[in-house]
Length: 637
Image (cartoon, rainbow, N blue to C red; front, top):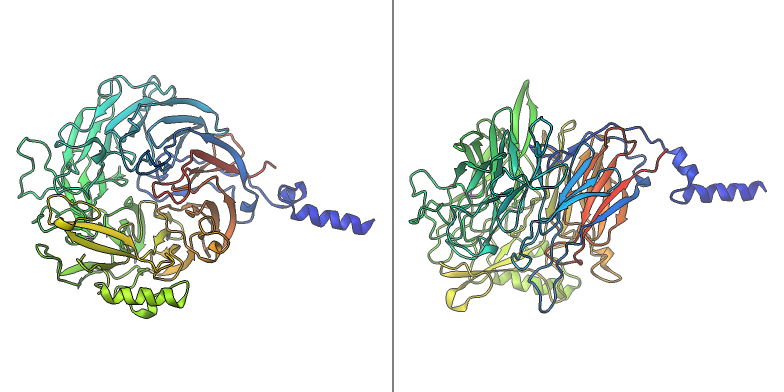
């Protein structure tokens, strides 16, 4: 009898959800914590003080609720170029969660239960837009009570700013016309799909500040990358900053904003105390040729500080000189305070597609640690000019080698694969980072997606640990003359551009796995503390896929004060890790991959911390499109 009891006790201990296991693991009460803006803070960071879920109990997380928007675009032989991408990170204000679907339908849910309170459909044309996503919405509150004293604001794929009442979802009629502002006003003529707002506007005082995603690989005279601030009550334009040097013409001949300038498609940060706006800029159009620019890319691939009241330039720091690689500044500027010596310094941390991390004084734009201008490869195609040097930060360790690849750096499923890659390497321009594009093809590592991208970083202000997602997929950049055009058109230039994965005969990348990692960096020492593969090819390659680690993706991590880091891994899984070591503690398989950044909160008066992730695929289409906004929580005591 005692042996049977012992066996049952062991079984009970091993089975997930067993009441004995739940009582043995401590589940603290936790502290109320909201997620009021896209990255939790207006200065980024993706850090939450929520602490109920800990490294000791995270393995007990189970699905609490799921909300399906029904807003999916799937690809097919007679349909669109890309499937929809569900890239949203919701916000939580008080007891309500707000989010947007890929085609900009806004939802309000009960943050405890996921039950829908309201939805608002702006009726975006579903036939327009090759890159379909909405990263998030923004919240503005006046401090008063009443209709539209709390507004939820989003930018749309068809270039509108929309404001609705947070309680009802009804349009705020005093904002623009019937709650909408047309942001195409002032832009040069363009096709609808060339200009979209995909990131949430920044809120500073009574201003909603936005850039836009400009399809900047198509032609030299795409719409302006102007950043604009609108009155959050009336929708009136309060200021505009177009990335044009002061000595150049600011407007086109028809008095629209000058075309072809760098755009701000990613997330803008604000510093309320200093009344500053920090905008990460992309590179000047088109992406892979700049012989025509002649100074127009002064603010290209930079972080720019603007006066919040006027939009006037305060300072800027350029991360790439004359960017002809699409090395946009892709991520939200991270605003933190660092103690260096005896001084508390307001800092700005900017990660880049090259895998670089720049740490600047956010009041002046000056580097807190030295940045060196080092010689880089020269000799672009005819008509191009190249920068003699590029900025390299000296403090934070880079995950990429600067020098040319050798045969020892290559990889393949078999010896024949590796030999094929080695033979191809001999045909390519291969002089290290910042090698210009070429007619014969150029080794492109990191490729146009990075390195780092919009999903990172997350930052723990207690330990000064920053976690980033790093893609390591090798590519080849090839330019072709106009009469032999292949790839991106780059109209108005002598060359088209093609970006191809660099693989062997069996389609395996020519550099070894992992092809994507999660990296923890100690900002104060500049050292990489740990680096772990981000997922695997398990759900893409039958039988052997789990052996190949690091699924390329643009997702990002989230950190909690209890010492956890959560991240989807692009392969259909959502995982939790110890922040100090990178040890995986929990995972769950999702309906499809999550091309998004998670968030967490605990509503006042509720006894559970909730973790939320959007699982809906991406425009890359590795796994199917979906529409599942999923919430996870611990069991109740």
